Length: 131
Image (cartoon, rainbow, N blue to C red; front, side, top):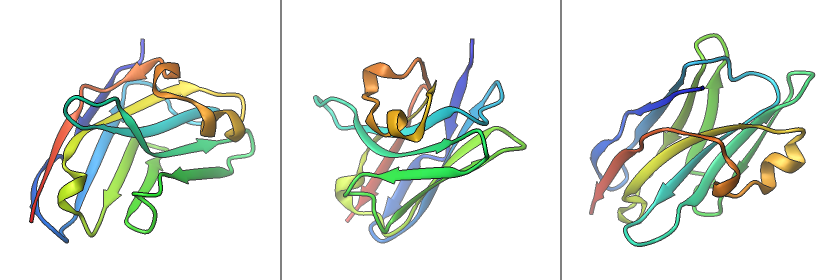
């Protein structure tokens, strides 16, 4: 079974940056829907960003409105690592961030997956942004 391990969380001042990493134990290449979620205390996990690579190697990325223009999701194909570069961080970005992975047939289905649809999850990494 695939294992996902996040790292890179921590404390940062507002307007600062962090890069989260999610190391996968298996190849996370084509046809995998890879995503970052975050969770605030007492709330359900919400989507942050996701990326899908099709059979031709073309990548499609999706971002929540809160992440657009500030966060970038990317993948190191050789090392099987998923990244989330977070810039211009705000206090309201403070949360526990999780990476998730699951096989998907297309970018269409990847975009519509809910948290409950993902089979593989990391343990979470805490991000704290102070204003």
